[in-house]
Length: 143
Length: 143
Image (cartoon, rainbow over all chains, first blue to last red; front, side, top):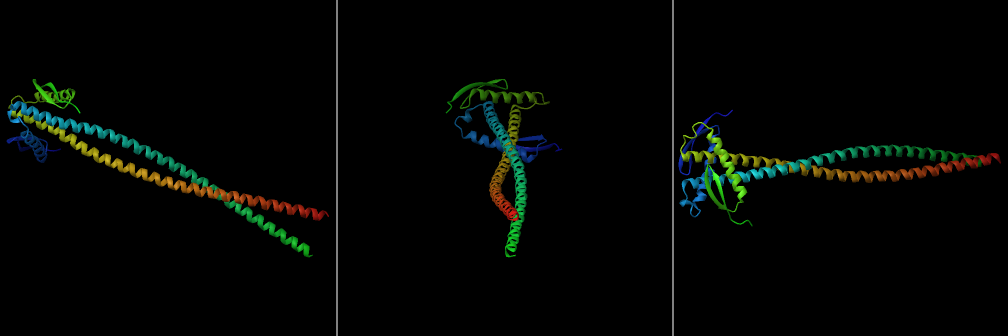
């Protein structure tokens, strides 16, 4: 658990002492982001003419806009991630099917190989029998 | 291209006329989000004792915190998406390899089948030759 910290940050040229559970580095990053927005606003025409209240609302709307855009990006990425997860899952299922098919094919190949060896053996036996017959016939003819 | 619109929104009980390129529905959503935060703050002890400036800064920091959290989530999701894309890509490559292997196996099986047919034919011929020999022998013995 993080402990409560206190940090001084400068926002819009004013010093604020913030206390909370966030780390100082994070608070400085947030302050720096807000100062960046205020700097941008200074370059806008008529900004200096706005009331302090209107300036604050303008800043708040601007940060909220960043937040909503990031949130929309989160939603888009979550959808994309879901699609990719579905795709991966489909590909894994496809690979398993291929694996099963491959095992079945290997078995069929091995059976065919065994059948081949059996045929080769039978062929050799038949050839030997024929040779034997021919030899006997030759012998009989000579006698 | 969207045209410039003007919308009235209520933030913290005050009416603001906003003009910009965002749709009114979006501006109302953002205003509603800000009002939700202000409502939450009212429930906090000592909030009413804060200066207007400090109240604004508190709100700005709070929205910025939402933004940074959403941004961190975007970065996390982008990393996860990249990992999933890499995984999908690996699985696709694996499937292509399996496809090539399967085609090679099918070719080997077909060759073995052709060899089998050839052996079966030779075996049949040899059997026929042996039967012929046996018939000739029987005939010779009878004569």
